[in-house]
Image (cartoon, rainbow over all chains, first blue to last red; front, side):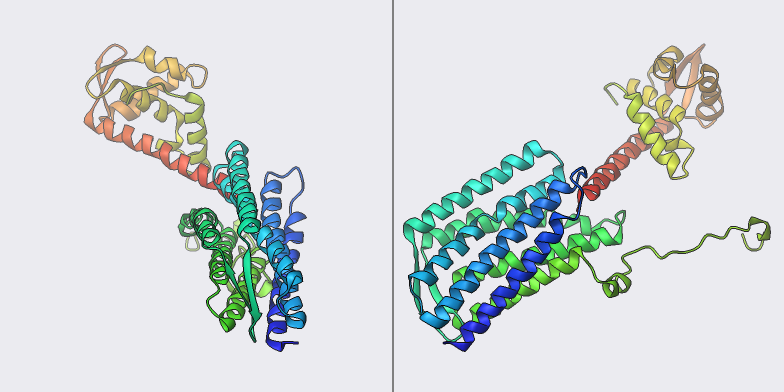
Length: 258
Length: 121
C-alpha cells in the first residue's frame, strides 16, 4: 500500500463528490418550462461527466496504491479519459446557448465537440496510454503525442476560447451583482479545471500530479460556491439588493427635505 | 439615413426610454418618428407633412404632429418650413436625428445583454 497515492485518490474522490453534488443541484435548479432549463442541465452534465472522469481516476489510483499499475488500474484510467474527452460537448451548448440563445447553433456545435470527443476516445484505445510503476504521490503515465496534441488543439483551446467569451459581461454595469458573481466564478472554476487538467495530462512530476488535482478540487468548489453562494458570501460581496423600506408618509415631506 | 422606418421598433424603443423616466426626445414616439422621416430624406431635402403622416397615422393624432412640428422642430431650428406642409432638415436637426439613431443602438445593446443575462442559469 502506498499512502501518498491513497491521499491522491482521496483528493480525486472529493473532486468527484463536489462535481456530482453540483451536477445534481444544477439538474433540479430550474423547471422544465423555464428557458434556462436546458442550459442548467448542460452545465450539470458537464460536471457529471467531469465527476465520472475523476471517479475513474480515483479508482485507478486506489487500485494502483494496492496492486501496482496493472491492467485493472489501466482500465479505470481509460474510462476516466474517455469521460473527460466528452466534457466540452455540454460546455459548448452551455456557453453558446447563453450567448446566442439559438438551439440551431448551440446543438450542432455541441454535437461537433461530441464527435471530436469520440474520435479522441477511438484514438485513445488505438494508441493507448503507457502506465508506469506508482511513485509515492501519483502514478506516472505517458499519453501518445497525437492524443496530447488533440487534447490541446481540439478540446482545451476551443473550450478556453468559449469561456473567455463570457469575460466582457463581468465589466458591464447594467447587470445585477449576483449574475456578475456567477459569471466570474464560472470563469474562474472552468479556467482552473481545464488548465490543471491539461497539466495533469502532460504529467510533469510525482508530487505535481497531486498538487494539480488539489487545484482542480479548488476549481470545483469555486464552481459550487459560484452557483450556490453561502449567506456569508452574499453579504460580503453585497450580492442582493439591500431591503430599504420606502418612505410612505408623504404629508411629512417638507421642501427642505426634498 | 436610408431604409424604411419600423414604427413597431420605434415604439418599443420609446417605451423603454419612457420606462426610465425619459419622456422627451428618445422617449417621445412623435419626436422619434418625425426626426427619422426627416433624416431619411436627408439634410436640406424636402419632406412633406403627408410623408410624416404615413408613419404616424394610427399611432398619433394629426394635430399633435402639427403642434410638435411648430413648437419643437421649428422653434428649436431643427427644421425650416419652406412651404405649406413642406419642411427641410437643418444641420442641427441632423445632429438630433443621429442622437435618436444612437439611442436605438443603445437600446439594442441593453436588450441583448438582458436576454443573455436572463438565459444565465
